[in-house]
Amino acid sequence: MFDVIIAGCGPAGAMLAAELRLHDVRVLVLERETEPVSSVRIVGLHIRSLEVMAMRGLLENLFERGRKRPAGAYFAGIDKPAPEGLDSAYAYLLGIPQPVIVRLLEEHAIGLGAEVRRGCAVAGFEQDYDGVTVELADGERLRSRYLVGCDGARSTVRKLLGVGFPGEPSRNDTLMGEMEAGVPPEEIAARVAEIRETEKRFVFGPAGAETYRVVVPAAGISAEPPALEDFRQELHAVVGTDFGVHSPRWLSRFGDATRLAERYRVGRVLLAGDAAHIHPPTGGQGLNLGVQDAFNLGWKLAAQIRGWAPDTLLDTYQAERHPVAAEVLENTRAQMELSSTEPGPQAVRKLLTELMDFDVVNRYLLEKTTAIGIRYDLGEGPDLLGRRLPDIAVKQGSLYGLLHRGRGLLLDRTEKLTVGGWSNRVDYLADPTAALAVPGVLLRPDGHVAWIGDDQRDLDDHLGRWFGESRWFGESVSD
Image (cartoon, rainbow, N blue to C red):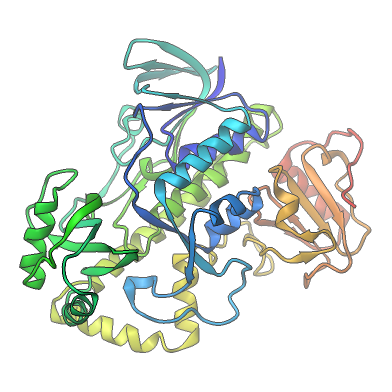
């Protein structure tokens, strides 16, 4: 019997498997596809996702295979530089092929002890008081304590669970791909600049040596994946020429369907990633949102399985992540409206472009799209409560370097606090030199601030709220 079966080995599924394995949870990942996706679509890891990877020691491997880009022009493609002094050590975008992210996260999960089976699709399941019986397409039946659907927008798990997926169907299709062109770069640049004056959904820009990234509105193209001839047809319709495109690296089509699952959990079955929410890729938030779902859920589900979770801990997954996804859907709806060629949306876009010259507006929109502006509702308290703590300087060098094991952390500038009987779940660092404006903070395993202060009794109450009952195993102190 497994502790958790995960349907889907995309970024969210692989990340969740790794997070669970940090707590010795027995994990099986079932992936429908027999081979990893071979298309080399480039995606961007935003600031918060880079922080997530840093907290688990994964950044160096990603840096070797990605390319850093300025952290700007996220919102509706409005070309503004990032505001100065962003509160993060990772204030940039990392462009990286999506298959590389998936492979690295899968290898990370397997290295921690997760089992991944390819060519295995969930066909049905039944849950009861003790667990979930999962039936595969070949008739095999597996038993697990929990099932998590990370199986994408057409999630079988969500459909079988009977969870509603309200929202809007796709109204506007778009082709996206990478290919070579047969005309000089300066000719392309001049024509693209002219077209983008009105058609904000159109992109034809360099993506590497002799390769261009192409995004073009599509009318009536339903093939998935599309053919190169479809791109030629739509380029002629939008631009008046196809630029002699040839030798495609990968081709895809996406719509602007926008939907959010009504619930993220029904009993012992949960949803994460695209199985829980879909939206247009405007702003590049989709993959990031799914990875961050997994990062929020992993330690909570592990706590439930390991037997120390407070009664309401697992419920905080939906309470925290559902509103975040709802906000992402809202801002992508807004961005899609701003890409319209109609006079009204174009006038609003012009006004917003002017407003983004104000630092406070530019900063607000960037923090929203990169997820560093998230504040979970953890009750009344200072503004830092519920927010993620940046990778501040501590005497051991890097704060995030202390979070690789996926445990909580008490950072104590007073040197008088203690984690006491929670030392098997929460690490402790006494550091009066820490670059922190408060006496002490309790960090959850996902790096969000769960408590601020210097009162031991108040701290104990919050340790119990997030990490269960106190157990005296002997305190471990990080020097």
